Image 1 (cartoon, rainbow, N blue to C red):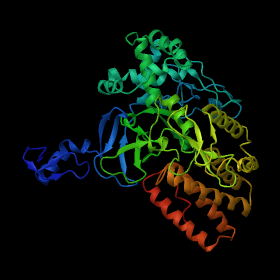
Image 2: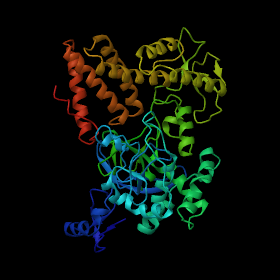
Image 3: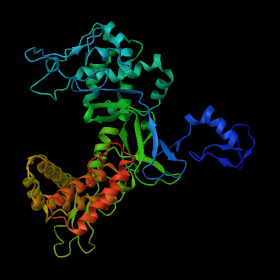
Image 4: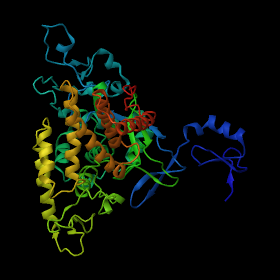
Length: 516
């Protein structure tokens, strides 16, 4: 089919290189349309819909590894349902007044907005565009939250914040009606959520607060609960540790990003809290663009249960349907009957919670019922949670104790190994002169985990990048001790080169120490 010029409708052979979605009869009309409208519309993807994924994004051209796919402006940003005290103006965690004043003037409260009484950083945040819109509604209600510092428990969370993000979205109806209409089309899964204890609390507390305390009677109970479910389904957690920010944000394109347990993207948040989506691997034209809403080191049952609880869907991605999980066998364990010829016990039907778990050795008849497998996993999970998170020896003992029954890439072994790398890294940073043995152990663990990451979260993925940074630091410490071998020196150069490539498209990767 012949394409037509977007400007004059004449036959056109020249397509936009950025999105491949529009055509032009020549460069003059392409330049004119770029200035007139296409600059704001040119995208590397399109929104499509099908029965399995619903609305999702598909690449309209080949997207290179490391390429920014989009920058998404948030429709609303703010605290979680229960949050530590934060500023409604700038989103930063709050500092008590006594920490801002000379010694001796201990005032156990936060600065409060002079109009609405909600805590803020200071007077300048009263004029924040984010807060000014809601301030008049909060002030008119007469409600004043009793949010105070808790020095003995700095992680104390205040439930009063549950109203803020829903209110900010509701106020879009008067300030940005087109955005409000877009939000109404987002998936909510309200029917599945209504039976949960949380939605019983929201029905009893949030709904009357919005309708009665704030006087927004035009919004029914159904509307408020539907909006809460939209937020729970589609919001992203925003963490900016250096700025002391930990909030949630609702993003229009982020809401259409489908999930896959082996993602081809990652995201970060810039200084304006825009969500920046980056391709972690090459994405061919026509491929689905997806992220992961779960952790890579969980087994299939645990990942799918977490997604069902948090996002209300049953994942059927390639990893979830593959009993071997890309050859890692992360959900499997060693068959207790096959001692001489080790074999794995894997799910017969990975996406069926009631599946039988069978030994892969055709000569072996060993199998476990689903309830036996779940009990096994729960025991291992509780054992991991009970370990002292400051003591590497406990994790080493866990690995040794379960070596006969759990292979080296079993999910619980992988979780213990990753926790161990973090503990050894912390010990290296705080214990003065480092010792060679624990550093070499870190290098060994990172290499092993990187082999897993190459299968489960390849390319520039977040988990793999963290491992590369750990490996880089550990090899650097060996170099400072004068015990780095020539192959390890070459390995460090290779790791450095890759991290520098990743850092070019991800400002959260710190390359300031890459001089040596």
